[in-house]
Length: 111
Image (tube, rainbow, N blue to C red; front, side, top):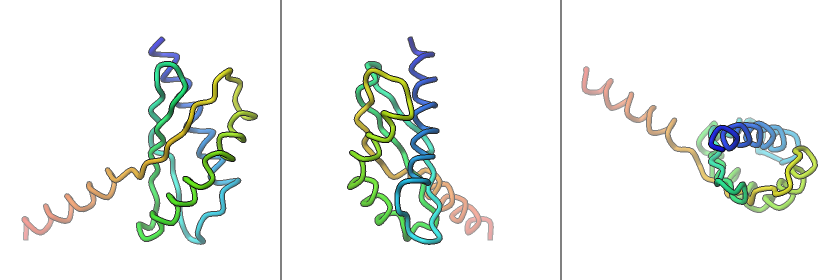
């Protein structure tokens, strides 16, 4: 069951990435990536973690995704063959930003 959950989560993550690129109007010059997707064991809920480059577009992109979540889910229904399409919640993935800040701090320590 765990393996099935992982496979479904990865498939949904890939499809979400395609839908966001193709169907959502993003700010010019922004790059949006679905970095991780946590799928509940019953497939009813999904937490999608989004990375946005450059950082200054993050709030605008997240706001757009939250507003468009219903239409994104409707498109997802047609792209995947599941009885239950998960309810998606978007979260900003800040791990990459934290790693860059940590690198900067370590560089300053070495000077």
